[in-house]
Length: 190
Image 1 (cartoon, rainbow, N blue to C red):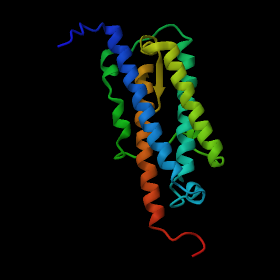
Image 2 (cartoon, rainbow, N blue to C red; image 1 turned 45 degrees about the horizontal axis):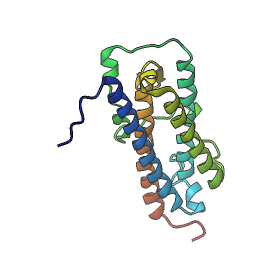
Image 3 (cartoon, one colour; image 1 turned 30 degrees about the vertical axis):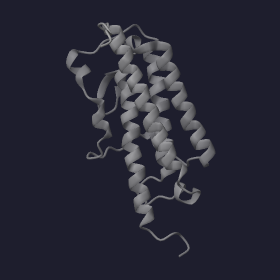
């Protein structure tokens, strides 16, 4: 049996951020693989007037992540902050459950998504920026930044990165629902 010794709190936090980034990569790849299977017509077609197309969902994910990055950079430029103990216990994974529908704030609603290549390029570039920020700042510093989520309330930066992954998982499920609805509809022109 190999002796691995005890981990320091710093190592555990780094490990938690590492696992979060792996989860981000996993769901991002899963979502991109799903979107790659969608033809251009279905990519931009809404199942109904009140539902987003697959392209709009992807654009929304990019907009949210861009907003998160901008907010974290602003918070990281401020002196370190901390949240009360109970605020730090809020599980960000609740975002992945689609039981409660929430209307997206105006600034992150999709508007005329670009063609596929540009849409995916923006989405990937935004993710690369978030990961670069995480690698630059590290878990300890991210825990000292506060993000004001419109529905969850204030959460620390590390929890915010976790939120991004669960938010993407939520919308991965939404894309699957949209594709299922579109598959049940007659294509235009029939």
